Image 1: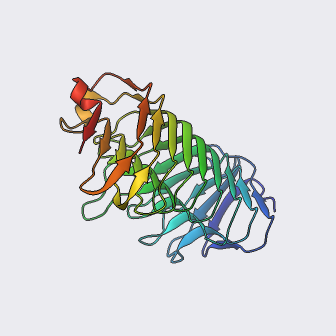
Image 2: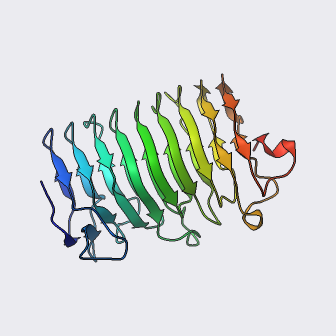
Length: 273
């Protein structure tokens, strides 16, 4: 299915039930409603997602998705647990509201490659939890070549995220960003790789591990660069934080990372939080 260039204001979600469907836009240009394909939720939008993927082997590519009127706990793209081998390629998603998620992946073997993923604002509104860019809750997800900005958390690996990979990306959570990468699973959260990620402008820990119950095991964090602006960090925030209050971390591999301006002292490099 090809969406020609233009602005599409959708009043209800687009659901892709069939297998092997491709939803392809004409590319995107930030700030333009005529150059490229722009998919935007309309006023009064009440569905749980702008796009819901149920079928297997589905591809969404080359468009700007702007879910600015989602209800609380809504998603720009929701990938159901029935989906498998989903491809989200070279899309831009901006204006994700507080208490919402850009891409919520509950499908197996999902591939997210390329594009910008922005929240509505870097400072969450009082009484909200801010927005999250990409949340993964199934195994073998691969996320790469993205620019994520202005989210409370840019990429989160939750339950059953075993085998997940996040690499070759640049993320800037913002002045109130909680984490750039949050490994937050309670079960099935092992064999996760975070590699070659540059994180700027993160007030708290750029990478945080928070196991609960079952151990997080064989987590690899390598070749990452941490370069926050000095004024935006808090003095107690570690570069890589791990909180073992409610669970353990086993076989944690941390190697060949670079800590840039804004962090001082070796205790800031790998710390308990």
